[in-house]
Each structure stands twice: as C-alpha cells, then as structure tokens.
Amino acid sequence: MNPPNIIDRLTDALGVSGVLTGERLQLRQTHDWSDASAAPPRALLLPADTAQVAAALRICHEFGCPVAVQGGLTGLAGGANPMEGEIALSLARLDTIEDLDSVAGTVLVQAGVTLEKLQQSCAEQGWAFPLDLGARGSCQLGGNAATNAGGSRVLRYGMMRNLILGLEVVMPDGTVLTMLDRVIKNNAGFDLKQLFIGSEGTLGVITRLSLALAPQQSEQCTVLCGVPSFDAALHLLRHAKVSLLGLSAFEVMWQGYFEASLQAKRSKSPLSDRHPVYVLVESVADARSGASQSMEAFLEQAIEAGLVVDAVVAQTGAQHEELWGIREGVSELLSLVRPCATFDVSVAITRMNELVERLQVELSAAHPDQQHLFFGHLGDGNLHLISGPYANHADLEHAENLVYRCIGAFEGSISAEHGIGVVKRDFLHHSRSPAEISLMRRLKAMLDPQGILNPGRVFAADK
Ligand SMILES: Cc1cc2nc3c(=O)[nH]c(=O)nc-3n(C[C@H](O)[C@H](O)[C@H](O)COP(=O)(O)OP(=O)(O)OC[C@H]3O[C@@H](n4cnc5c(N)ncnc54)[C@H](O)[C@@H]3O)c2cc1C
Image 1 (spheres, rainbow, N blue to C red):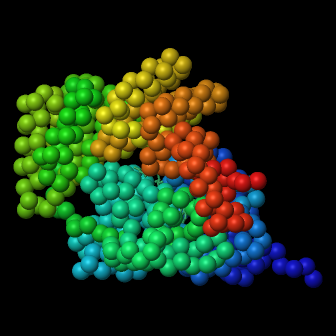
Image 2: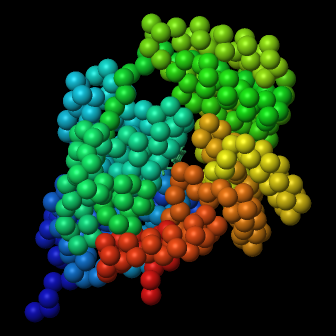
Image 3: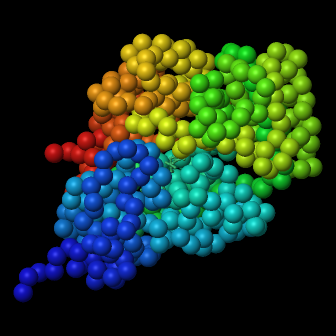
C-alpha cells in the first residue's frame, strides 16, 4: 500500500469541506487585486479554527510543501497569490467576533473577520474600530495585520500596528504562539507580536487578534477644498492639525487624478472651477463637542488666508459618500488605465511636491502617451501614483524603475502601506540597506527553516 499523500493527510485533518481540489477549487478566486501572476494552487485549505491551521501547517512542514497564506485577497502586492506547486491556506472560515469588552473597549476576533463586519459590530455597541480603507467589505483583520494596513484615518488613529494589543500566530511548523494581550502595557521581554505585523505572511499565520477600540464619534464633517497650490495644501495641513477639532483625514488629489476619477465615475465636479490641487478634509468628534463649528471656523480662516479658493461641505451622508467616492474611485479608474503601474510610496511631506514635479517631468518625457495621476494621504506623507495604460511590458518596467530609483534618491519608502509581496521585491534595496535585508533573511531562516510560508515574497527565496 502507498503511504498517504499530502492531500489525503490534509483531508484527514481538515475534513472534506476543508480541502478543495479539482472542480470545487476552480470555482474559487485564489489571486489578489494585483496584476502579479498566480498559479492554480494544488489545493485550497479552509481550516475552521486555530487547531486546524496548526494541523495543516504541521503536515505541509513535514512534506516540505510551500503554502500561500490568503486573507480577503484585496492585497495589491501579489503576496497571497499562489506560486507553482504551492497549497493555498485561506482564513475565510475563521470569521467569529469572539468577545467585545464594552467597558475596556477591546475586542477579540478571529483573523478571517472582515474589517467592515467588525466596524458594524462595534458601532452597534457604541464603539468604533477606526481602521478604514476602500477594501473594507472584503479585507480581513488578519490580512490587515499581516500588511500593517493604513488607510484614510492614520493621521488620527495610526496604522493597524497601533490598534493591535495581541496576536495568536501559528508558526510554519504548527507551533501556536498565544500572545493575546488585552492591555496596552506589557514589557515582559520582547514584544514578539510586532515581528508578525507587516511581515506579509512570511513568518507565521495570524489566527486571532486582540484589538483596541476607539469611542464612537457621532459627528462627521467632510469638506472638499479647491486649493491654489501644493504649498497652500501644506499650510492648510498645518492649520488643520493646529486648529481643527477631531481631524481624522487629510487627503490630497492633484488635478489630473481628480478629473480622471470624476470621468471614470461619469460624475461632475462638486466645485464650479478647476483647481491645481484638491484636498479632502474630514473630522470626527462627539456631537456635543462642536465639531461642525470648528470645521466652519477652520474653513473661514483658510479662505481668508488664501489657502482655500472654493469648498463644498457635505450636508448629508450621501454627500459625504460622494466626496469620498472621488478619492476612493481607484477601482473605476484602474479599469480605464490598465495595464498600468500603481505606486504606494512615502516621502517627507515637505519634499512631496518636489518629488511629484520631478516624477511628472521624467515620466511625461519617457512615456508621453500615458496618464500619470497623483493622489494620497498627505497627512502621512503617503503618495499614490497610477501610471498607464502601458501596452508594452518593457515600458511599464521602465516606469517602475524610474519611480523607485527616484524614491531611493529622496530617501523615501517604496511601500507606504500595501507591502512588498512579489511586485516590489526586486526594488526593496531602494528603501532598505543590505544590512537590513540580511537581518530580514536571517529572521526568516530562523522562524521558517524549511522556507514553506509565502516563499519568495518580500525577498527572493534562499536557494
Ligand atoms: C480598493 C482597495 C483599496 C485599498 N486601500 C488601502 C488603503 O487605503 N490602505 C492600505 O493599507 N491598503 C489598502 N488596500 C490594500 C489591501 O486592502 C490591504 O493590504 C489589506 O490589508 C489586505 O487584506 P486582505 O485580507 O485582503 O489580505 P490578502 O490580500 O489576502 O493578503 C495580503 C498579504 O497578507 C498575507 N496574509 C493575509 N492574511 C494573513 C494571515 N491571517 N496571516 C498571515 N498572513 C496573512 C498574505 O499572504 C499576503 O502576503 C486596498 C485595496 C483595494 C483593493
């Protein structure tokens, strides 16, 4: 009799519903939002709990079979995409909100809970989970932790890392690390959970999270401003930081992005004239705190100082959605400019305009037929760029090299929030020194000696 193969062993451990192959596998999406290549996985594992994740990894470890870890598959770096010969492991069935402590303002969740499900559940209990991003309906909290997601409210609440109190992680050999603190203060030795946050599934599989909540804010003010220059936008940011109650987002859109986004949505501009730069300012605060008066005063002073030329204030929830829709209209826009290169970089905010001007000049000279659209979270120094469409792959690669070289020269980061995955792997040296990359490699080799977890993501797999 032949010894059981890996699929038989996995089926014994997870049950038939936990191991999809053949036709049942073909019905499932197994690649993320990036254009990175993906191979069909040998099987898709759907463990039901931490014990099954551990059992699955123990078996893959024993067989030396590489595993692609998958959350909600909204990633933009190709990290969750299976490579040839890999088994995909999805956290989708770990989708329970286990315990919300409404006195302490903390919550314990399984990793497959979507961001939106947690946001809604917290709101019902008078709390908020303040991380927010366009992919909220599908991205999972485990994926948010694995990518250290940012989003539109980083200015106020920080990145995912700042909201994590504890993690449960399954190591590549199946060992379970339970580090589910529910308190902020714990200086008992190394804070090991930090290693796994932002490690893009290369060091361990996150199965549960303990998260800090914020008080729910009942009043939200959103204003779209037409701004005469980027310099004025910088002064407006300073003004907002100093004087605006509950500042939660400060988003910038250059004219090209703003107009292309409206065109993609077939919408009209809410402002009557065209402006070189547009800024979306949002504040959230308690209704009794006078947030809307604070926003009015902020705007009045900004207009008087010539920092804002025209503005529209959202009066209803629908108008709030409409204004944010322009900023978050990336998916509609991508359908118009694909195949394209998308960038998510960061640089000191005082140098952002210099960077944009240089990239605009160099990209337009090298690729005059393409659109180069700039926008981002100005408050965090995070710049996004969509450049395309590129019919020719060599041109696209040329644009990527041009941008990342420039980011290196500006001492910025080639990934502000989306991670490295496979799509930025070859450019990591523009943002990290050889000594840093060498330490990352040594950590990976120590925690995953067989190299089975997301091999070849972040940096090339060791031969
Ligand atoms: C429309 C849109 C808007 C977006 N806006 C933002 C934004 O504003 N800010 C931002 O930061 N990102 C943004 N993203 C990117 C994406 O949503 C985030 O990176 C998100 O955190 C990914 O979560 P996910 O569950 O979809 O992970 P996946 O795409 O499934 O995986 C992403 C990476 O994390 C790993 N991973 C996933 N789950 C786990 C786990 N449980 N344990 C270990 N590793 C795991 C995967 O292997 C992969 O390397 C956006 C994406 C889209 C499509």
